[in-house]
Image 1 (cartoon, rainbow, N blue to C red):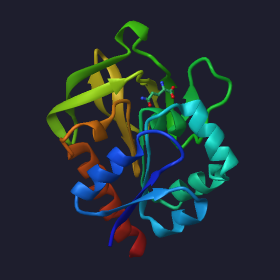
Image 2 (image 1 turned 90 degrees about the vertical axis):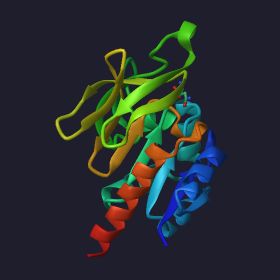
Image 3 (image 1 turned 60 degrees about the horizontal axis):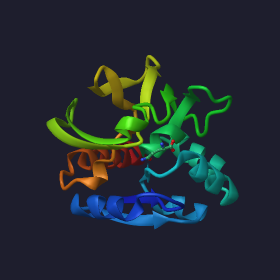
Image 4 (image 1 turned 45 degrees about the horizontal axis):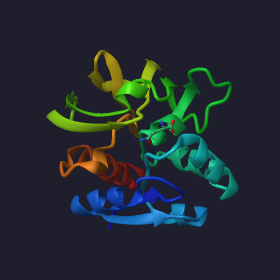
Length: 196
Ligand code: GLN
């Protein structure tokens, strides 16, 4: 059975587990890097990216997560997870996992609009998705291999690069599972391709 892991070091873990299960596949919390062998795809949840990075390093996940992606296994970063996946972070000397070719800005919508909801049209996914943004980042630049999937006020807030997906918002915080379903489909397709 298709199994999707949610990195469970910090952040919005339970909500992702519930959404993945509602899409009809198995979901497990990933706390040790050996568990990466048991899963077909992973979600890096929202939370606080510098804290999550510190925990990724102390639990030995850094190289293991990069290798997981390089094997062709799908990775989905939401909010802080998007920041972890970027190859460049505006105003910071170092990025984190660098899985996706993109430059991102943290807390980019400003303090006065720290949290908000917006209806988005998301390519391949939904015309009318109610997206929840919490101190969200956005994507300043995307490499040629990546496709923008959604914008809000002309800022890119969702993108896909092959088997990598990211959203600046929290798809797990609404009842609408269409974004998570899109990732579940990516994982199902990759298990077929990787097995053949
Ligand atoms: N602003 C946070 C960060 O920089 C991300 C916020 C979130 O995941 N909701 O890590």
